[in-house]
Length: 196
Image (cartoon, rainbow, N blue to C red; front, side):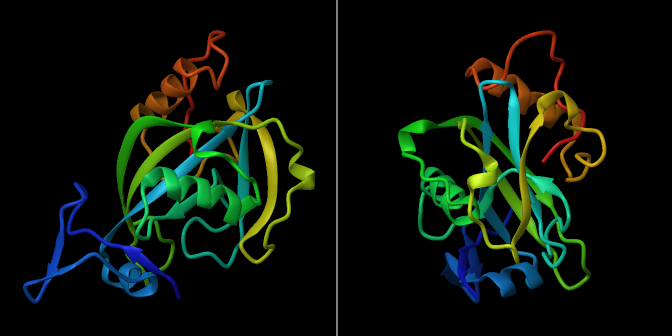
């Protein structure tokens, strides 16, 4: 399994084990032992106000069978580099780093796993991205992602788009930042009900 960067707490403080600085470890070990990791969440939006989400495989430890944005865990890279890598690894979308906008939002989420085997703690950083491609032409690993689809942003928060542990304030902050950067239309939209 791949290595991931690890942290002592939700603030991203350095992790010391036996008085030694540990910056990365095996992802499975990090998840089993509950170390904090950083992830980049990229929210592709099209001109019609749609949000591209992927349906995660039912075999995934984190949010199986949930519609979420492309997300990847950092390993010896910046959050922006991770976001670009995540778009390609998850959905084969090639993006130039200049095309992504850091929304300036980080949320600490404690235990996003659905199994007792893991205690997955994430510091999530959010990026906006304009993409008007055809989801049906994307190539992705069906063992990781079952489907990809643009959803009307107004529908996010209702089944089947109601999973994932962010509160209403966090969701409104994401929507507000996406709107302020022109990724979502401003027309009378109050914010997601419950999203990624």
